[in-house]
Length: 228
Image (cartoon, rainbow, N blue to C red; front, side, top):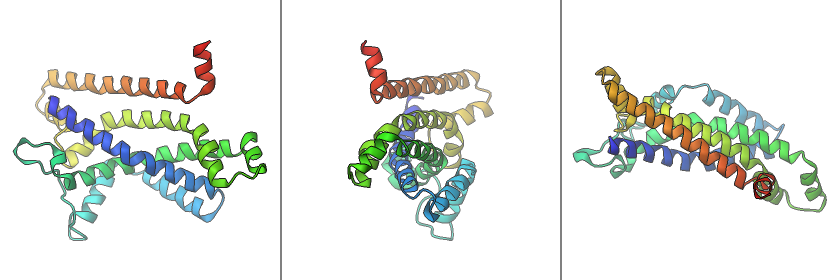
């Protein structure tokens, strides 16, 4: 089971590495264009993607990139001879982007709301009155102060991936804990189901603990309270 856990961990980590900059970039663009047509289009797209289940997103990606439409990516994960899935990087593209599309809209919307709240604060208005360029205001003032809610929602989404990855792995025949969990339930292998449930629960606890620590480190008042 160790290799299955490693495979799932790699899939989640790669998806997180791709998702975080995309979600923050979308949030910043949307916040910069608040009330404009670009912001409205982004919000409609984000709401639409957030309402799509991950298996629907995966099937649509397979239909678009792995069938008669384009046929440029493999529809399933290919790893022969017991090799890890990342030995064939092309077969991991669709599972990764399915997870990214499943969680990025939530992160982007939460970060956008935090950015808008910070951009309306007094200290940001003072920075603008001092002549600080808007891109500097966004990067140094707004983004740094809005990152704590972003950390919390990213942690929630990564914890969700630990359990929600089951459908994506089964859809793309990815050799992770999701496929093992499906096979164990089908074969009534209760000890394996219990072990996998404990692994998923441990991931929930660990991710939330790391998020709480990072939130304290990025919040000066919280650091001061601990130091005192």
